[in-house]
Length: 259
Image 1 (cartoon, rainbow, N blue to C red):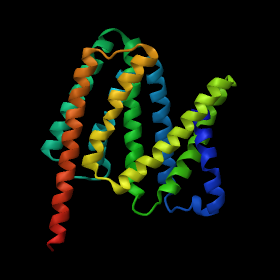
Image 2 (image 1 turned 180 degrees about the horizontal axis):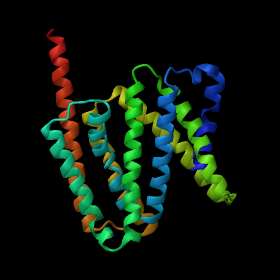
Image 3 (image 1 turned 90 degrees about the horizontal axis):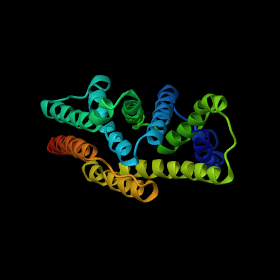
């Protein structure tokens, strides 16, 4: 996590130098700190899960983040949660139980990685809600700079406890991971700005296909039937939630245009 955050921060250094204090200018330091803390914790737990689970299984569980967002948005952002959203969320968590059932029945050592990924999804959902709360008056650049800088600081204590200098090949991979993470965040924010949520959600599920492909090619892994069945349930429920949110948003926009 430390090397990943370090590489991501170094990429942003030229931008920070060019913008000076403006790169950190915000009226929400508390929210940005909270966002960085939850994102760092979520990523650490996801790394543990990816180390101890097949790639496709861990990736499928990561999609529960959308389900957490629905629940938490109603609690913390006071968003209206109707019967359809509640029903779709319950169905989605049913899909999670389908994926975890054989692992949990096999013993705690098999269940912990799955539970770690669920906790990771919860923390990352909290992180996304933090972004949503301040997105109206905080630029994407400021969010990225705060996330990279604080993420690096938060990763230092854990790194010191288990410190070792990686081999050159490992250092190159860790650095590449940091650079790709920064690029991913930049593309994600840009997509949110210019894209339609209903159109973006199905595209995100390409990660499932890619995870199965890379898991098989690189590690000889194939997802179990339990994973495939549970993933299909989660995908269906989150797509239903996304479609519903899109429909409600369009109806509200049309209502305002007629006023």
